[in-house]
Each structure stands twice: as C-alpha cells, then as structure tokens.
Length: 286
Image (cartoon, rainbow, N blue to C red; front, side, top):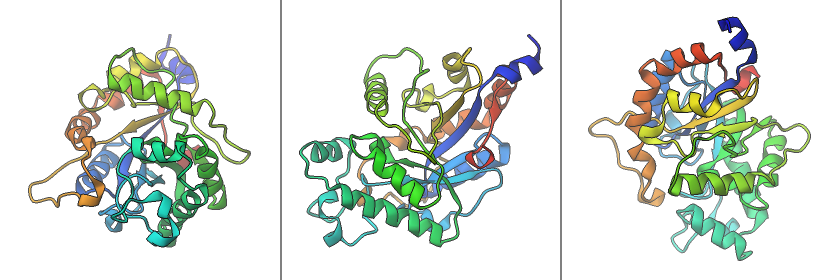
C-alpha cells in the first residue's frame, strides 16, 4: 500500500498534555513539544499553581482540565461543602470523590458551580478553550458526565473527552484495571447535541516508560479513519523548581514526566505518524 493510501485510511491523532498549569515542568514540556510539533493540544488546570504563567502556543489547542480532586476550589468553601474536606481542600483522590458520590454526599449543583467557575476563570483571561476533560477522569463518574457536557455547552466548548480506551494493548495490573473501569464508566457517557468527543483515547494504561509511539501504533493498527485522543503527561523538571503545594497531595504523575517527554522529543512520534498514515491535529482544526 502506498503512503498516500495509508494516509487516506489512517486515523486523526490528537496528542493532548494533561495538567498544564500544574507545575513549571509541565509548561516547559508543552513548549518544547510544541516547537517539535509532537504535541497538538493541552488541558489547563484553572486552580493549578502555575496556571498564571500559561499563554497560547502556536499549533496547540487549549482546553480545561476540570478539577474536583486536588488543590483548593475557586468557589468559596461555604458554597461547595460537599466537594471539600475539613481543611477546605478537595478530597485528594479519585477514590474519595467516587465514594462520596456513591454515598450521595456529593452535590451535583456544587460540581456544576465549581466547574463553571473554573472555565470562567480561564475564559476571562482571554484563553480560547476548545475542549474539556477532568483530573483523574472524574467527569466520567456516574451523573457527572452530563454536568461536564452542560458546562461545555454553556461556555461554547465543543469537545468533551470520553475516557474510553477501546484500542489499548493487552496488559495486567492496575493500569489495566484503571482502563477497564474508565471504559465501563464511559459507555454510559453520551454526548448531547452540540457536543462531540473523540472515538477513543489512548495512553491510560501505557504511561511513563510504556508511553511510546511504537506501543500506540501497535494498539491502533488497522483501525481506519477514526479520531483518537492520545493522553500524556510529559514534564521537564529543573533544579530549584517549587514543590507542589501540600493541597495537591502526592502525585504519581511526576514519575512519568521525563519518560514521556523523552518519548515525545526523540522523533519517533513524527516518524511513526508518517509511517502509519496518522494525521496529527489539535481540536481547533477539527
């Protein structure tokens, strides 16, 4: 098959960096990857410690990384009491959020209020938002996906992530369990009129050293002209960088930063895209 034929049948790939605004290391990684053309999109934490330093990047679509897991809410504590602990911070983990939700102690109106304020905060800074997803994919929890879609539609955002990794490679352990849980949750997440999502995501299980262009190509082999969002977490830490605030808790994502940055900068994603007939795109170009 010729290269032209492969391209005609290959998928469109969005390579999205989650957690922009979390730390200078993530910002540096986005800047480096944008310069190489290996990242096409990034999702911004409105309550992230580094979010004030974020600016538009050439060729990068910016979205919002909704957060009710880590840090401090933008809303006054008195307005979102079901989302926070005794210290006034978010609960700190997917499990705690899910537990409170399943016990019917997490109020949907408070989730909507906080997420709307996060989007408002970014748009008021003049940031054009094209897509929406969430920290630890909490927007896929029962009852929360419709809220995320409603917030997106209210603010003129056309794309919402469904965290369904349909074409992942075979794997065992916690990554596979996480993938399976999110896929089961995402089955029930249907986008309303005016909101779209990619056909699937990739990168939920293959993280850190397992995040490679070769692994992605193996998973997506033969899928045809679909739209796939690759989820990644590169970072470029420097000596003297600030520590994450205590309100953000322990984050395993820091262990993935340099592995995933190296993979995105070694030229393999560009060469693999050419070989596989992928079209790399941001949400703004769809």
